[in-house]
Image (tube, rainbow, N blue to C red; front, side, top):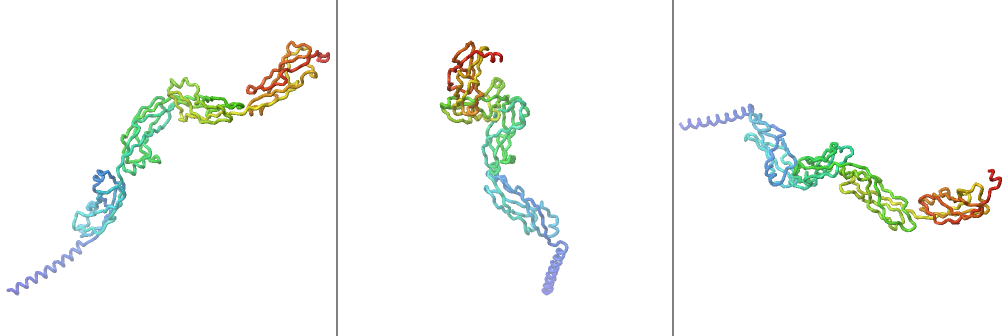
Length: 412
């Protein structure tokens, strides 16, 4: 009996052994173990909200994918897709800067093994959320109506806050409000959105402006072109003289309310002193602008040149033939042998005038009206250029001898 029982147990063990071998064979042949690679599996970025609460934001990369190698039985593995694989990167607790973060990968099916995946770590860049105050710059586009010019605009508020990642906020060089003039002839009152731009003029995306919109008022003013009148005070050093005053430029384009600008005929400069000066002056001098008036190009100063030269003397010699004798009795003539034959005129002026002056520029005359035969002392009259002065006339009285014309001269 016992012997029969032991025999049954042995048979059962042998049967189980062969059953396992047979199952292994069938499984290896019908449902073998295989490997599979899946690419572009999106990594879930965990705890981004916690990062934002701590004042940190993720800069890059915004998206990460991994490549995973799986192994398992063909039946379980054949239908596995990227959606069945969980890839995560926990971003909680990181501070500003670049940090290497582990990637964790798993599957929903415990029968599937993760043999390998790449990358296992990714470098993430984190930035601190910061806020900065910036002045708003007004930029005008387009043109005003003909004969008008845009005055200084007013922006409200004139300063705004920009907020965002430190890298982006620090790249903002200007916050600009753009307004199109659109051929306006009247004041512009409008509201416009702001643009935050970098040093290349490109808009910086992702930066929050607070407020986003500002109010703008731009006066549109009447334009007028008027001459500039330099004001000179004082007197140069003795022996020197102002010969010319120049303003560079000599005209200025101004703008202002029509009721003010219509009565403006010229714009004066602030006084330039030439007191006790012995050489030419060149000085940048502000213009005196009436209230409400401004220069269109914003340059409210001009270069005033005061040309100063030394005064010198020059003596010119004339003979009796150079004198224009007027109103001489037709029966008389001048006896040149018995009359004064020469006179000299000493004149004074600045060097440039004296150097160019000749006898032809001086006209000498004497009036012989009602003079009879005999010796006479006559007054000499001199006609000269306006900027030339007479220092000395020698002789002051010119002696002439009048005689009756001979028969021969009478005939002539």
